[in-house]
Image 1 (cartoon, rainbow, N blue to C red):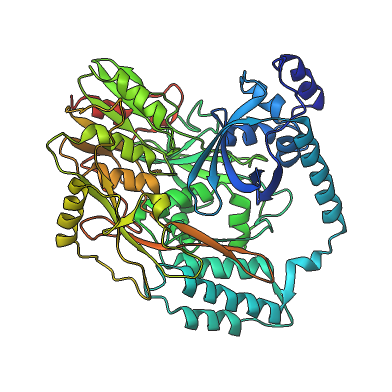
Image 2: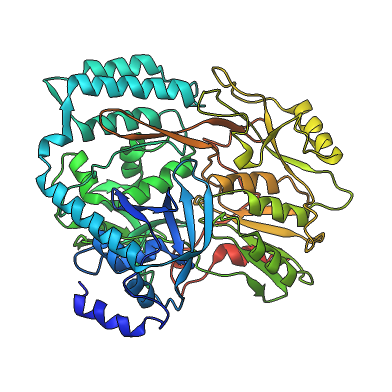
Amino acid sequence: MISLALVLSLASLVPQDVDEKSSPFDGLRWSGDQPEVQVDGTWYEPVAIDGINVEEILTLADTWSPGREKRFAEDLIPMLVRLEWKGDGKVDLDLRSLKDGSAVRLEGVEMTRAKRQALRAAGAARELSSARRPTALSRISVEDAQRDIEAFGAGLKDQFAYLGLGEVELDRELAQIRDGMAGVQVDVLELRLELHRLLMRFGDGHAQVRSNLPLGEPGDKYLPFLLVESAQGVVAVLPDRSALVEPDAPVVRAIDGKTMDEWVELARPYIANGSPQLVRRRALGDMREIDWVRRVLGEETGVPLTVTFSTVDGSETVERELELSSRRPTYGPWPRSKSTILEGDIGYLRIVQMDGDVDSLHEAMGEFVDSKGLIVDVRGNGGGTRELLLALGGYLIGPKEPAIVGNIAQYRLSSRFDEGHLEARYMYRANWDGWNGRQLDAIEAATAVFKPEWQPVGEFSAWHYLVLDHTEHPAEYFYDLPVVVLSDSGCFSATDIFLGALELLPRVTLLGTASSGGSARSQSFRLPKTDMEVRCASMASFRPDGRLYDGRGIEVDVEVLPDPGDFLHEGGDAQLKAALERF
């Protein structure tokens, strides 16, 4: 662990106009091991600070005693400096709304000592409260548990768009959970997992049941590597991406005697019943919490891993015993590249997250005006908002080409949702007075052939439409050359919409692997006794051909899987190479 002395020594590197004992956050709380921050009275999930990914900050915080919670609250500036930040007294924050999952960017947020002192005082109060809290608070009476189960069912019936998706009879399942309660008290964590597993069966990729109680226990250990999917199978990568764990035999065949397919099946009940690629990606990521996984399986925790590796051709195997890690490995954005012009005058537009930064997109497209082709890389992009799709679409639709409907959806009617419920997704009814003639023609053409593969159950709004068209931005021009969009299973939510809409354009080719599949307008409600948060989709979202976004993902035109070395800093990029070969 890095000592406090080193933390203090970094103060000399802090820019002169920055108070090293300051913070941009008005409040800080934790959901498991992930922070949630308050800015101007609103709570968010932090994504990046002045372009530095929060996952990188947390990874560094884990190495500084006494760990991420205290260090993120009190030593944010020294950590930013350690990550080569050279900012000033204000920062730009990339955030994700806890209300609907949308990306939010706040620019020029002032960092002050008063904010940091408030976080420190709040942290001390939480520690004192935690020390006084009896362990019995992790258990509630059967009566209170039943009230939460009732509230869970009522909330889903009121808000959940995918309530009728899948073969799940909600009332019967909830009755079975209630009937299975024995004794006079119920373990809150066990109740949370039961409700979560039930919610996962509907197939909503955004859904989850969360509580403030950690899943693991103090002292739990983690995998000492990252698991990623390659053309040759699952491979293990060191968390700093400097090397493969077993370079000469990189393919992971088994861990603790179970094949990777067996591990995926064990994880499946805790993951949304979505596309195969979504389930597999999340299962491999969840394996990082190996001690928690072992505990659920009734196996011994804390002991070393037995990992069976093989060569790519499977001719040789290597079995190794590896010690667990005290730090949770983080994936972070990958690949870690930036927009540029590649060899051969090919434009390369890298979009790490759907953050609404249309100014950067227009700036990059200005650089690509004389390029000979364009590659748009959204690999690993977990979503956000739709501004970048609309902005890029304006460049890719010709002056004589029709506007394009990229998404058709309707939301569940609830007293919590007003008529503008989908406006945050840039979706409007067919009679919206903001459409122009071209856009109305596109909606009419789409409506004529639209047949949803699944009919939402219950009372829903009228259909809403997302339309790609010219935006009339002064920088916009018609990019009439071939475009290749790079995709993988890390693409989700708004990035699914991005892919699903762009694939309809005549000069666009999707290359890589299929996206995970998800489109939700996610909402949340809390259960009265345990304060557990239930997140669920409020809209049923379709592609124009009638297929659901959730549960499918967007298939690619040309499938290319990464090579094992592509996940390393000094490795290659088979998918990017394949994209370049198309020009």
